[in-house]
Length: 130
Image (tube, rainbow, N blue to C red; front, side, top):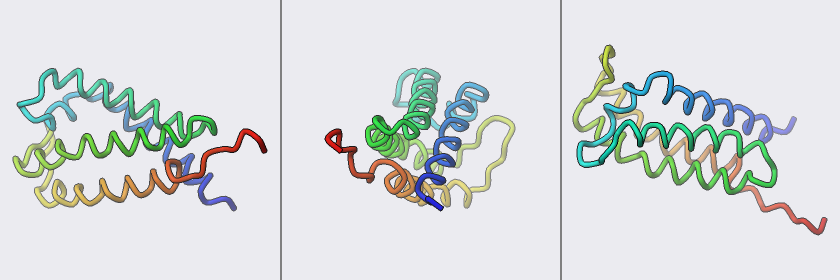
């Protein structure tokens, strides 16, 4: 069994679903955006589009590495919002997320980066001459 290929499909489904959720429940994500950033709803929409595009992109061999690196960049870019959420103990409307969950989520970002890198970004580029 090709574990990397299976992982790629799971990764794609994860990011497409997460990105779609940015449009299904934007208030869940808007609360994470620090006040010093303008247009939180627009940032949520942009990150949702990026997650969907990256999820689809990892399935296209010619786009895989670029999509993987794009997802890595996105995960790094949204990390400050996750830190902000943990420091301020913010919960989305209608949810009471325990503080330990907000803090436990931070190292999960590193695991996600590793997963994306192993699945897509770290794959050697295709050789068009082969």
